[in-house]
Image (tube, rainbow, N blue to C red; front, top):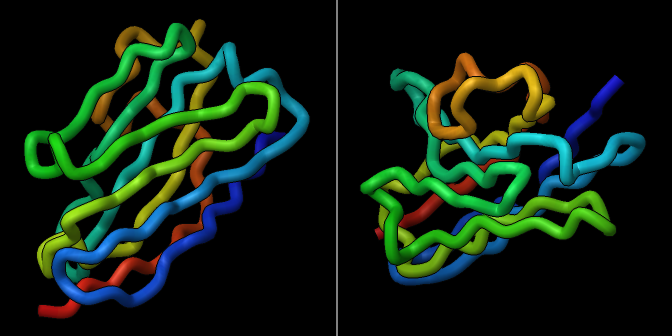
Length: 126
């Protein structure tokens, strides 16, 4: 059973930075498609960034140039570095994963992911 645990959320002012972490154990991360999603109150859950098993990366247009996704396969940790945060980045952020062999496209679509964390709240004030 794959379990994902997010941490690093919090409250910051606009322009600030946060670094989210997603940890797990028991499975080889280099075989997985990994992603970060977020959901604001009253809105659909949306993909923020994804990193494929080969290291290729996809970002949502809204975060390009501000957010950076990375992972450490040896440490089984996924990160999302968020800089220049805006109030519209306020949301619950979720880590997600799925076995790469089961995914046609490792990107920002929710349907590609089977395993989800419980989320960590990010609040950005103006």
